[in-house]
Amino acid sequence: MSLRLFSWNINGLGSYRQSLKAKSNEDLVESIASTPVPSIVCLQEVKCRRDKIVREELTKVQSRRAFHATASRSGYSGVSVFTPILFSPVWAHEGFEIDSKSPFTHLRTALQAVLDSGFDAKELRAFSDEGRAVFSDHSLFILINAYFPNASPDEADRFEYKQRFQSAIKIIIQTLTYACNRNVILVGDLNICHKPIDHCDPGNNVRENKLDAFGETASRKWLDSILHADDSEPLLVDLFRKFWPDRTGAFTCWNTLIDARRANFGTRIDYILVSPALLPWFASCNILPDVMGSDHCPVEALFREKHPESGVALSDALGLTDSNFSVESIPYGCAELWEEVAGKGRQTSLKSWIRPPAAVSTANPETSVFVHEIKLQSATGQKRGLSETESEIQQSESVIQRIPASLGRTVSDVGREANQFAQSVLNAAEKQKPAATFPTNLNKKTGAVKTQVSIASFFKKPPGEIKLNIDASQSIPETRTISEAELVAFKPIPDVPTEGKEESISAWKALMKRPETPKCYHLEAAKEFRVNKAGPNQGRYFYLCARPVGPSDAKPINVEDSDVVMAAAASASEGVQLKRSRSVTEFRCNYFQWKKQLR
Image 1 (cartoon, rainbow, N blue to C red):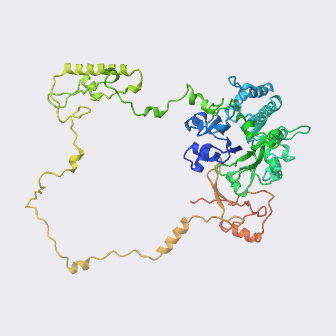
Image 2 (tube, helix red, strand yellow; image 1 turned 180 degrees about the vertical axis):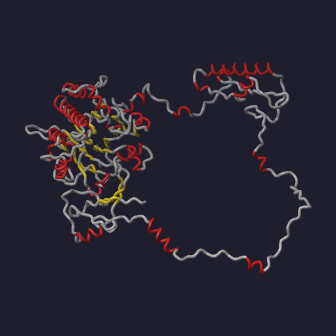
Image 3 (tube, rainbow, N blue to C red; image 1 turned 90 degrees about the vertical axis):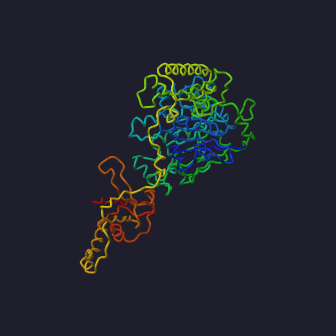
């Protein structure tokens, strides 16, 4: 039996579901994991708070266990792990805070090592509040599904937060590896582009960040410390580069604002990092750039069914054949064990209020409420003011509906109180007025006299024939024929002169005509954009080259003479000569033009 490890930053579960037009989140997760090989699915940037996870029924998706780390802020961060029930972990843990109730000591030891290294509980709580990591124990390895923070050195607070998060993760991996003797797999969006081969334009990145070399950033140095060791075995191994050491253009993230994916102008920042001892277990590792739905693409790795050297079966290594293993037992940390799902904090479902009532037995008078018909009686049948008691009677309906016995233990009490109330109302009514016959035009529900005309009366045929009373003294004028002389006297109104009419229409059309889309330096129609950033130009429109962005060192292509190109590009700009600062390549040129506003 084989197993697939699948990791993907989906940039929001809701938006991804909408892009796939999935009917439910269950269908969405099932579409990701529906492969011939069982899959452990690790998702980042789920962007679902805990209450939404419960509301969307993501605590268990069909035949899969679910483990979530949710952010306290809505629409932000969040990671999730979905495993087949057969491949459920022994335990799971959300966030970085120590769980004193957890019976599993390895992660507690690792988290305590973080605290002993200069971190405080408040700092670890801040990591947990952003929903950035889920830890799960699969016997053969401990899986860490993480979404690393992204911040530049210009953002002082967030940059420090990012570095502290990286340090905490490294301490946890070191403690699990060396102190607990456990294998570790780290998957997720690390927000680090490790080597120049993993970047679409490494030279430009060095220039923009004013670096001496590509690997001089703090994050790349941190990843170097994880993946490389001078005098000993590395802590973890980049599994993709183990199988594809020289593969170029292997990117996992693209900037959608500049349509960078079309030109594969991206970076590789999503990883599967494994302990060196686990390398023989893996048959392959690859990226899936053709899988759409996010600004990232998935990364997957496939386990072997048996260890190639020892011959141990994967199912045995994962503890699936252990006598203590049971698919019925829910692992510690699973979302099914959340209090709002299975405990005291569980919210009553709306379905429980709309179930059909159980049949009511009339044998016991205490289990149902007697039906009382309260009749308003009037001696004269004319409109008059109602007394307080009569108003009280009128507000209550003539029939008190039966209360089903399925409501619980208080139904007999409710029945007795309802009977007593109805009887007291009847007694008060009998004392205030004499009995009389019920008029035929009373409303059956409220007891009020019907005075409004029914709408049906407007559609009835009136009785008898309709006769018109015409005064004979009023004479009706007779019709006569108009003579030819009178017809000549009527002159038709002459038509509006058409001279100059066509010119006027053409002038107005030219004035109101939409400006032609200008052409870029490729002699192709430019693409219209809008300034959304706050500032003096917010809301203005401009034109850029419609081609995707490419590397800065791309080779130039053959174009026509520059003067001809300039004239063509300026044809839609009222003859204004535009200057080109570099050669035209197969990617986006540096054409720019503000769109003229209609006045």
